[in-house]
Length: 138
Image (cartoon, rainbow, N blue to C red; front, side):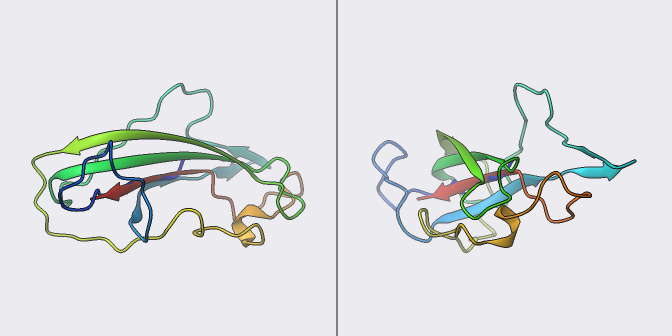
């Protein structure tokens, strides 16, 4: 599950920030393991996945974007299915030692990106990406 935070701009809160611009950076991602011709996902059957916010981030308001990307129909361009959830966070206790570079949504992905275009049911694909968590920091 890709997980991405985005910081709110100075003076803004998570409630007032729309998440626009190159402000989204990845803090978590998981992917499958391959054994005995089987694909196993770490989050299979789970109702929640715990992710620690990195301590190196500065204190502030953040938007959190969790993505679940279904690849079972990704054998043709545009077949990947994106399921997204967002949350508003207020982070405290961070060191502020890192200011990550980011991407924008929309625009971070293209339908033709190899990671979203594959024949899932062929012999184990080695290029799978399913879960991402991104955060936008203000």
